[in-house]
Structures are given as structure tokens and as C-alpha cells.
Image (spheres, rainbow, N blue to C red):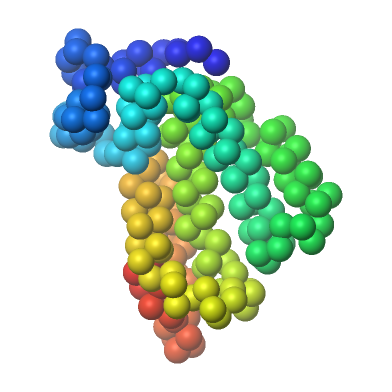
Length: 193
């Protein structure tokens, strides 16, 4: 999909007529955007960066993130880390994602829409996977000791995104963590997440 609507606005340093020409411009634009408009910093960092680097790079990463989101949806549904256990289920997840995303072109293909919805959805699904697997007693114990720092980073990526998604993630993770604390089985990564 060619550049469209908001892509042109975000190709400029926020609230100026100067095109983004460097990573310093990306951060300047994000800073101005945060104080003048809104807080979707993760989404607009990626959007501004790929508007600087070019559409070809975006297309490659965007396709990978869509594929990753489909895999994450399957892993959540199966409550397992085994992708090859049921290839038909993975194919079904892909078809259902393709058919059920509202306004597929705006949510998955359009640069601005994809970074705001698809990409933050990917980070949210990735962030919630250990919580889901822990509730199902399906999270390998060897992985848990390595999750504390990654969960903090992925939590920031997932939480500093679309406003309603951030609230939902906060409530879900707080509830799951409180439940596990009451059971005295909350690992450190739950708290860092």
C-alpha cells in the first residue's frame, strides 16, 4: 500500500513542515508529539523510523509481525509453545486473522494503522503469553529464570501503545499476578512485567 493519510503527517517532525531526515529528527518528533498531541510513543517511534528508512523495510518487518501475531494467537489458544503440534490449527488461525480483523487494509497493511494496531497487538500478545502459559502450568521452568528483564522491556513496548490496550493489559497482568501472589507461586518476571 502506498503512503496514505497520516503517513504524510508523521513523515514530518511533529507540528512542523520539516521532513524527518535522521534518527535525531525521529526523537525530536516523538518528544513534540508526546507533549502536544498524545502518548503512543512505541507506535510512532516505529512509524517515524520506517518512514525515514523506507517502505521496503517496513513491508518486510510488517509481514513478519503479522506472521508472528498469527503464531502467537495459535500459541495462546493451544496454551502451549508447540507450533508444529497441529499445523491445521495454525493455518486456521491465519485464515481467521485474515477474515476477522476489522478494516484489514487499515489495520494490517497501511503503515500508520499497522504500527498502531497490528504491531502493538503483536507486542501485547507476546507479553501476555508467559502469563497465559503460567496459568495453564505450561510454561517451561527453564525459561522462567530468564524472563525478568525481557518481560520489563516487552511490557513497556506493549503498555506504551494504544490507550485501551494498555489499560486492558495492566488489569489482566495485575489480576493474574495478584492471583499467583495469593497462591505464593508468583515468579519475579510477573512483577517486572
